[in-house]
Image (cartoon, rainbow, N blue to C red; front, side):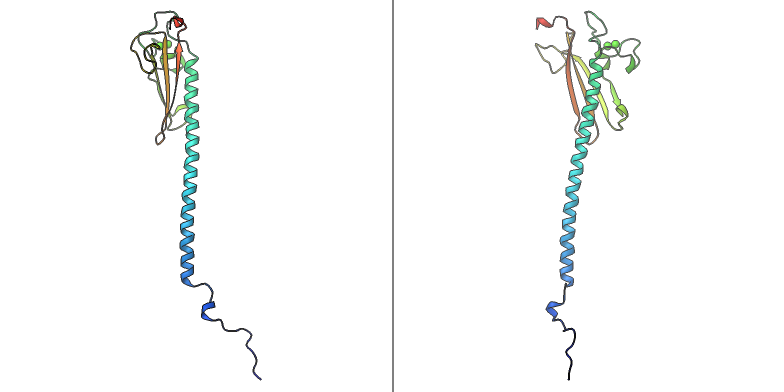
Length: 171
Ligand SMILES: [Ca+2]
Ligand SMILES: [Ca+2]
């Protein structure tokens, strides 16, 4: 009497996963992995950009708040200064006491943020003529622009207009 074998021999079509199938699987897995990496990179870059823009905006607002806390001009009554910038004896930030003392100020690594720079411009404007650009003459209004930059990102700038509170009604 012959005994039946415990295991039947498998046909070649049932031999499991072929090398070709493994290669195709690895290719598909690699392509999916690369696509996933790109999605994560994009999400990370977007998140970084949001963080950088928030920091730039905060640094710009911080600078603007300090400047706006100062008086309109070195002179407390008209005529206002024809030359904008720090006045005699004002060697640094701590001694600046009017808004235009900050004209041309460039701060690198501002508030300890390495790579960030803050530029400030202050100039007279004539509201009846041009509020965007300097009019080159002394008026009762000054425009302040604070711009914060970081290499690789578009800068953030904020602007504000301050008045001497003299002759404003004449506009
Ligand atoms: Ca001053
Ligand atoms: Ca000044």
